Every structure is written in C-alpha cells, then in structure tokens.
Image (cartoon, rainbow over all chains, first blue to last red; front, top):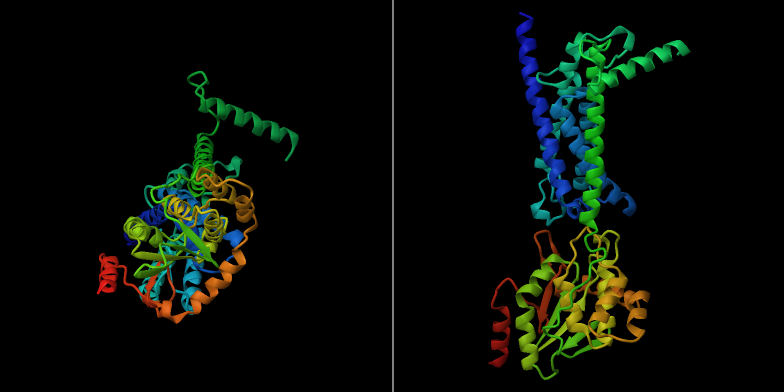
Length: 174
Length: 271
C-alpha cells in the first residue's frame, strides 16, 4: 500500500522536475538570445539603479539556464528548487509591484519585455504563470526525489562512511 | 584534521585521479568507487556551470557592444539637399513649398527607422522637387534606453551640429541606416565625429559641438515642451500621449499608417 503512492510521487516529481527544467532553459535562452531586449525588460520594472540593470540583465538569463540544466540533470535538485522558488517569488514581487504602481510593462518572462500600452498588459496571466511555476518548485523543494536523476544515481551508491559525504544521505532516507 | 589523515586523503585522491585517467594498471581499483562517482559528477557540474557562465557573459557582451569599433556607413543619396538649423529643429526644402511637414523622431527609435526606410526617399524626392518642406525635430526620448545611456541625446545633438555644417541630411540618413538596437551600446561621440568626417565635415567646430553636447540643454527643454503639447498627442492604447515618430502638417497629426499619406497631403494642397 505504501509503495504505490511513493512510486506515483516519484513519477509526478520527475514530470515536475523536467517541466521546471524546460521552463528555465527556454526562458533563459530566450533572454540570452537578445541581451538588449533583456536590458530593456529589466529596466522597465523601474526597481534598480542604472548600473545594476545591466548586471541583472546579464546574470539572470545565465542563472535561469544554470538552474534549468541542474534540474534537467536532476543534480542538487533540492538546492536548485530552492533557488527556483526564490527566483519565482522575486518575479512575482516584481510583476506585482509594477501592476500596483500602474506601470504598463511586459514581464519579459520569456524574452521580450519592456514598456507596453496599457491595454496590452497581461498582469493576471503573468502572475498566474509565475505562481504555477512556484508550485512546481515547491514540490521539488519538499520532495526532491525523482526518477532518472543524477541525485538518485548518486544516492544508489552506499555513502562511504569515511568520506563523510552527507550530500545524498538525506535523499536516501526520504 | 590530523597530518596522517590529510596524507591519507591526499593519497586517496591521487589514486582516484589516476583511476580516472585510466593510467592505473588493470585489476587494481580505487578504494572507493562511490567517491569517484561523486568527484566526477562535481567536476562535471563545475565545468558545465563555468562554461555556461563564461560563454554566456562573453556572448551577451559581444552582442550588446556590437557597435564598438564599428564605422557608421555614410548614406549620401540625398546629400545635395540643403538644410538649415533653426533652434533645435532642422529645415529642408524651400519656404515656398505647398506642404510643410513636422517630423518628430528619435535616432534610437525602431518605429522611426521603419518610417525612414519606408518614406525617406519619397519625402526627399518632393523636397528636391520643391513642393515639400520638412522641419525635423530630433527628440531625445530614449536617452536612458541604451547601455551606457545617452545615445539618443548625443545623436540628436550631433545632428544639429551636422546641420550647422550643412551636412544634416546625409548625417541623419546614415544614423537611421546604422541604427543600434535599444538596450544595447549606441555609438559614442567619437564615432559620431568620425561619421561627420566621412561626410566631409572639416574643421574643429563640429567635433567640439558633438563632444560638448552644445545643444543638449535646448533639446531637453524642447522635448519637455513637445511632451506637454496636446496637439501632438495620440492614443497608443493607454490614454493620449506623445510618441515617435509623429508627423504633423498644418497643425494636425498625420496618420502615416496610411501608405498614401504623403500623396494625399500634397494632392489636398494642390486643390
């Protein structure tokens, strides 16, 4: 009785992990492909001083791709999920403040971004998407065990006592 | 950690490395295959992350700074059109022309480049024929939208400096033809000065004008007035406001979405 739900959860977790990985790799790659547009997208949130805009616009796509690749490989799933959740909270905060302040911008979540005409804003849809992605990240944060992951491959090996490697022991217990 | 322990760990690592490199004689395995796995995975992650970050930063910088070291190609098709600077606007075409256009544009604005690509030749033909006069307003609207900021204002100022040298039309056409992308590096003042040189502007007045930003304050003051001027406002879907490009004639905004707008204006003036 206990095995079946666990098995199902593993499968769900795997789907969640791969979905979140795809979202991050795609969104990061689209931002990376047009750095000028990404700069405008970050600038449009009107949150950062001029010098920080360029830094964030450069770092963000790379962070997203790195998280996406980590999730794709299933390596450090819990840490990656934690980063993803924090990032999603930041995105939700950014979009919400833009909406609340009456800015009319595109979130630039999947490339694009920048100022928009008021009638073209899509804050509810953008926030709903981010909340959905947050839910995926939280699943993996709570239950990082998935199939076909580097984490499970590593944890199959008995942790050697003398190395003191604690990385994967908690994964085994779960 | 004790000295002996450290030595032991070091020895183990050496064995592992040797095993990885497959230099170990066959039959002898490292003490802990799990640790080999972990090390291989960690090294692989570090390498991939480093490659993504370094490659990404390199590619993004290269893409954003594409205008660096670039030469703005001179566009001289309409260089014989005479221009006169008036305040922070530039006039082309005879005062006797039946139709006068006021064109408000920013050298960094993509829609303005589209407008130029579509209509600059037609406008120039009528200016040369003498039935059209154009007052060009260079609007520093997107000054913050390049990285580093300033191209919009620098180019508007340089346009006026070029007008003082009688080279406005080719200077203007060259800047639109070579328009940098928003959010990227624009052209710096030195590149603007070199464009002037390529268009046969000699002497020290022009470089000094560009470097000092001679018309900057006037351009900014004029832009503030333009933004307030409700006759120039249009509704872009979020309440009325000013946007570029804006074309007016006889005090009214012209709908340039209609491809035949210029012919219609000229025909109406003939009647």
